[in-house]
Length: 141
Image (cartoon, rainbow, N blue to C red; front, side, top):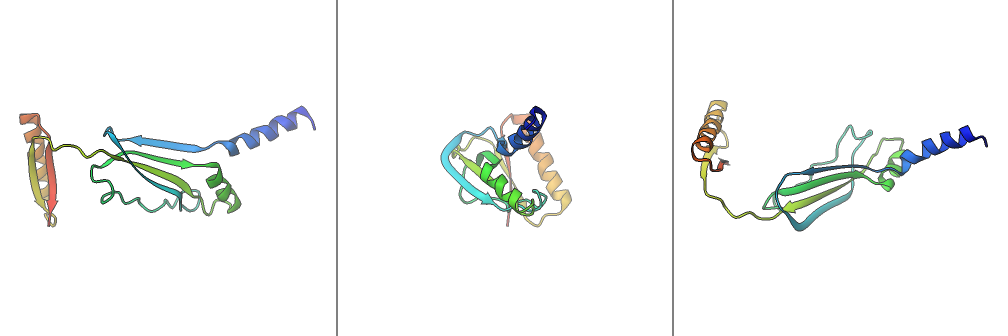
């Protein structure tokens, strides 16, 4: 086998060993609770993404970090299915439950019109600028 063929073969094989990995950090302090899906189903090279990971009930303090990865096994499955089924590994690290900080809470009815919602967020921005304290805008039933 010529040297050129060996280099071309190595260049073709090396990307198969690589793993796509993306990390999103929110800035919140991480807790020890981790949610994982090792084979989150996505389709057609990821054009149809996997279902949303429901963290609302399982991470009461919010999310500290989200990691997505195409492991070697995930990529192998994608290769064998010609990219039709392309699973990925999703890992969500929950945030620590934060102590309530001082600040205002504004309530907006869940069925409020656009003008009411805009007014509530405008009021929240005014309060933040005035008091330099966090303001929570909560949708209520």
